[in-house]
Image 1 (spheres, helix red, strand yellow):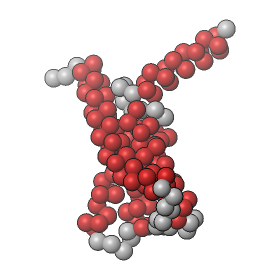
Image 2: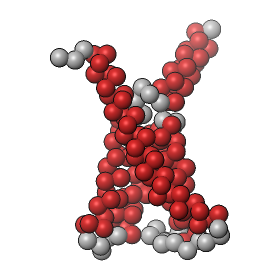
Image 3: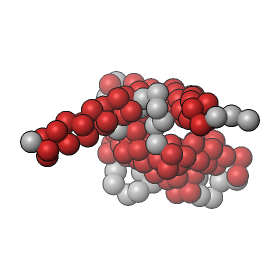
Length: 144
């Protein structure tokens, strides 16, 4: 029914929608944390026992900064992995004793970011432009 080019375009479009949707939604959660840091308010949970300040900075960096990289499709798999870890920590460490409804949003985000880690950014991404160019350049140097 669909030819190979149509399937590839659909896959790329699906990954673009997933990346941009998950990234922008996550950035909306991270923005409040960034604003806390800028205001000098480092009160935050300490689910990993590293201190409230470092926990806040890491969560804000993942939820805002790395989510922005995911939106652009820049270092996508590497950027999505810490966001996945942050959401797993939120669901199963910070909210370990809470009911499922409380954990559900973090689990849904974790699943979205796991798909991005496994599937990659797709053809509509900065990675799809940059990495083939780097590969070609490397192959030219190797052939010379």
